Image: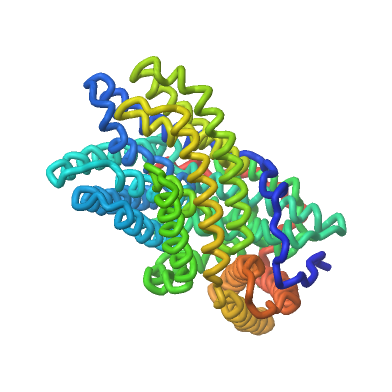
Length: 567
């Protein structure tokens, strides 16, 4: 029996201490940290050698693209990074042209707010992943307030494009060494979370949170494996079989060996051979493993939903972003700030899937920035020893931000804040006290005004999205149950039904969690959500048994697939 129970549909209290609690670091925290250093260092050091460190802000805009797409397979990463670089160049071009045409601060803040809303909506719709729109908004907003002429714009864009191309190469550099590294990590994560859920279920303490986390990890693993739409290699097929084993463990945790899942996960994380899963037999004696991926090729061939249809539900978030950023910038200007884009970027960084998460991000941003300005005051004497010292401090802050942000956003902000302040030193030294004061004021303005805009712009369609997600789960469950009970169901139909129901359950939980964090809406059907999830899990278990995918308890195969190093 799940421990999930219906919860209150109205969120009245916002967390403070909980928002600052540290989590476990990401398994690959060092990859974005090292990538951004490798992307920023060569262009910046070259400008130091040329005596033109004042241009480093433009090269850094391109270099920061190296932060993206570390969870994507390399074939997909190549495309995502290219689009990120193009998106960065597009926002930068709009900002530079606007800065060259007017010095009216109100107009520039308005342009920055509209850019931030577009960047937020597009990044969320395409699920580009962290750091999402924040870096793009920081780049475009900061350059809005750098004096330009139209004649300088092409040169500055060329610098950013060259650095962006270098960042693309940095992001793709590990591909020859570990061509399936992202897929391996996602598969290992799915196996480990499935093992953790199976352990709780076998111990009689089944946790709805552990189950949801496991289903989300398995779903993420499928998304990673399916992201590469080229012909699958032997290694990728072996990884897909392992994800099926994790998915089966979720449907039948009592009949799962968690130790075996963890052993597979440990083997997958390395660079050696991918473990075999054994050959579970179907009722008719045919080999189930030959059938369990029949739906994958078809799913890989399905084109993603059009971008326009994915943008529709994000309208409230886009309006929140535009309104909050604009008001934060206007208030900052009214208070006499020289850099209103700090308040604008602070507001832009707050907006998450719902109001509760937005509040948590506001707390994290304020705490991180306040500690960060103290760190900036401490490192300023070192940074001002010379151009090389300044670049080294910027690199250290870049590394620290990416190394720590996985533990909690506020911890990463402790390094992001001095980084942003040090960037203002690139054209020349600025008064430290003035920088610190302005940053603190703009942080508070951006957080307060930005959150007020989030409260004012409610997402009243959240409840309707939950109803649609419930309907989708019910339909997927009915289809899977009908096929599982029928004598003539084909392996392809059973596999498609099981995978469709599992994806619908993940979407329902994400939609319900997002809606539960919104205010001023009608009561959510939390009890129906819980009952729908429980019924779906029972149907998934029945479908797995009908497919004959449950592992043989006596099987301890240690056979392996040979690693295919073809990209």
